[in-house]
Length: 228
Figure: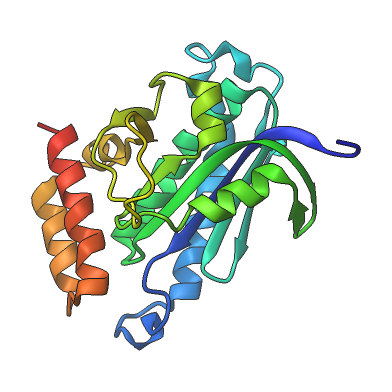
């Protein structure tokens, strides 16, 4: 396609954004989300440096290669480059965002795709954008999945992406035997957190009505399975 680049695109949105303003806390959700994006932007170069020995395809990429946009309740990450490099980089960035979100009472879910896109300022379009946008809301949990295009490119678990057989897709029509998902549990443990900490965060997010409780309980199942 003319004027299109190839790379990874990640969409991450905050669960339960409607009505989130009613929660009583000292900082507004908008301020929290802005801080999360600012913090991870500062870390991008160090993330690349920490990965480059294990993912040599990252050579040639730097912090300027990555765009992280915050639009309402959605964070969009866009990086032009090699499939393995950009998908692995998005995984490292995303697990920090998701963990920071949980610790800031902003549970998130999302999806990472790979393909062609066009991006300028706050405007982005193309197949990879459409795919990430379509898949980032298909699950009932706190977590991030690889879309079919990214699965076909990464092929096997690598870095922050692990195989998980029990992804809670909203529709029974979606059957992916070997889904690759973000191992945010590794970052959770790295921060000194355990399953009990997640239970407490989930409890405090109540009332856990059916449309909300399922996200936390499915994420807890994932956390317990990959950390035992």
